[in-house]
Image (cartoon, rainbow, N blue to C red; front, top):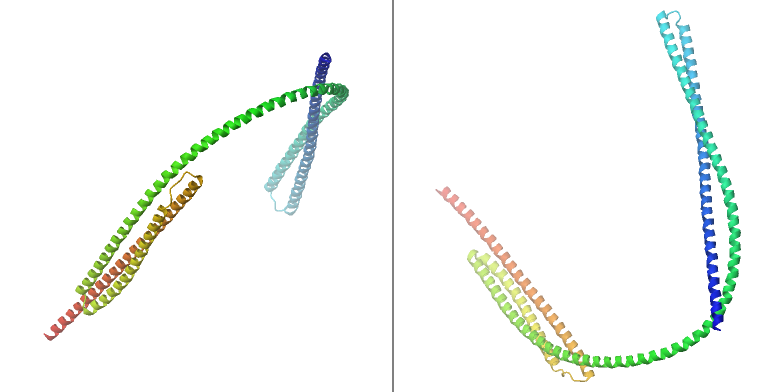
Length: 433
């Protein structure tokens, strides 16, 4: 059986080599046919180009015919012009034969002779030019036509040779394809025998692979158990580390809560201090304005200014009451925040149980969120209150400035009236004197 296998294998190799040689010969024949087709297409292109050149020459010949006709037309026109001049000369001679002098007749004869010589010279030059152009174009056309005809004959003969060669190559290719088909049939039979032997060998190899697969599965199971054990160890260490970190974060949260409470207390003290400063500054501005009004204006104007200042004081008292109520609400919000912080501090510490750890995490996140929210609300309220106080202070200052300007205007009016009164008194005194 082993000897049959080797013989079959050798026969198969020989057949494969033979098929490879035949395929190479087929490839070379196909390449030759492709080259022949390329040369044939090149010849066809050249033939097409020659036909185009012939058409171009025919078009040039037609153009030359048109040019000849135009020259003949010019020649006819010149002849007509000559006859017209001749008629004019004869008519002028017949009309003025009695009056015309000898000199005038000689001058006209001379002009006529010059015109005739010019006309004849122009006719001769145009005729010579037309004949030379016709001869040259005819010679060029004949030469080019002969060249094109010769090249076309060569192309036709070469095309016939190439077609004959292509036919022979086609017959050779068909014979080679028949031989290749025969060899492929023999190769198929050898392949079938080879497949049967390979199937038996594959069965043995499959059995060996199954044993190896079982061995790998056992090794993989052992590695998986080792990995699971290692994973459990790492998870245990992570849980212990996480519990320690949670405890540390709770301590940090308590410290942050204490700092937040201290900052709230400082902000309340700052708000009280600013309230007192604003109240003292506003009262001082109002008193100064009232005192200035009393000193600089007359009784009626002073009463008007006092009335205006009273209105301003009333408005300021109302706004100050609003500010105090806002500060009171802020204090109540701070007390509520302190109560929530105290309630959150009563949360039970962490235990070793996983459920208690998750609950502690939730409480911690809730505490952080509540603290952050309350802190943001407190900061927003404080900023709004500070902005309102600043705006109210600016409004009061503006109103005081307006009152000062009004007082100044009234003072100037009083001075003007006093001046006018003094002038009137002075005038009266002068009149009395």
